Length: 446
Image (cartoon, rainbow, N blue to C red; front, side, top):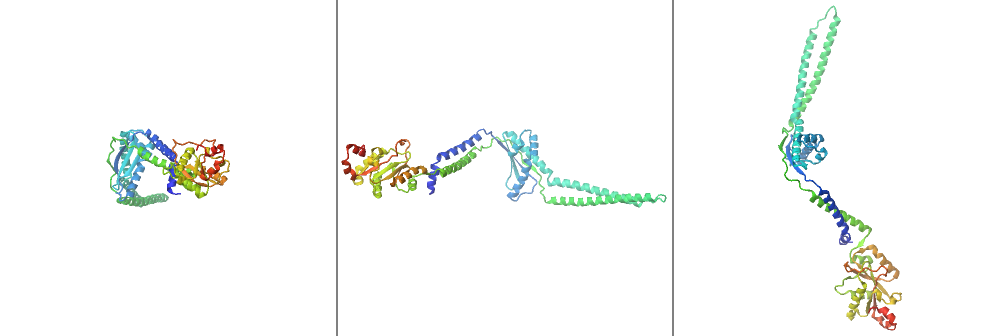
């Protein structure tokens, strides 16, 4: 099966299903956007204290760290309170975007809202909160905090040194009372314990001071850029473009894909034959012609098929919604009688005018010719195959047509399947000896 046949079977055969799913998808998207309210976007630009990025990945990392701050519920609530608006923090977080502007180190913070004034106010409040947060954790702030801790530790060490010197002086000046020597020993022990405790605390503070100095030194390579707002958000004057065109285009694509998939599933379970060649191939017979017979060669083709099959009569079987076989018989009979060199010895009858012996099985050898539309269910060929197998007569070929629904003549359900008999001229002598009634049955309307 080639791609052309697949396209005929799926696309042309089930175009109603495909079109229906496309329209449903487009209608659903249109209905979804039907009650959309206009949204406005307000943007502000900020710069942080991070080192200038040298690649897009670094710029994205800086933007991600800032976005983690501005989309935090606590920071959103603080920004809403500062701006004086009441919003759902979860919905506001979904309407916040923060993206780097290349590798410049500048970030653009955008807030969407149905109120343009609120969008600008919330964007500026979030930017201010972001700057305050970054300042609280910036290298300068950390240096200041470390300097305060270092000063506190240094002052404590100085106080301990003074205390230790005082205790040593007291220990040296301690005198022993001969009347009570044990009291001097107890006093000396107390002073010695205090000196030991102060010395231990001083050692711990010295180690802490070393760590603080190391941390402060490590901040020397950080950026000295001060976080700040470069450009405040202004009140937008135009709403954002609607997403309806984009979503509608996506809906058309999705609907087409779903339609083709549904058509393929239908074709898998109920296969069709989408052309006369396909129908003939399924029956393993040639195509004898198409209707309407514009070239007028159909009678000659029927005669050649009968001669090649060595049969003396042709019964034409109509399948599905077919044309008026009586009119077709009269038309073919007229063409055969016009040119005796081409149609000599052939007479054509429809089912109503067929001779009696062709009805009771006493006719000469005959074969079938099928008239069927170019598109038909493959399962509809089963009765034809069964008829051929039961009768033992060959199927000589197919006459295909694409019927115009305005001119279709459906077969009466109570009547047998239409068939067409072609009788050779050699039988005319035999017919002459028959009664008038039998001749009338045989020749019919002729």
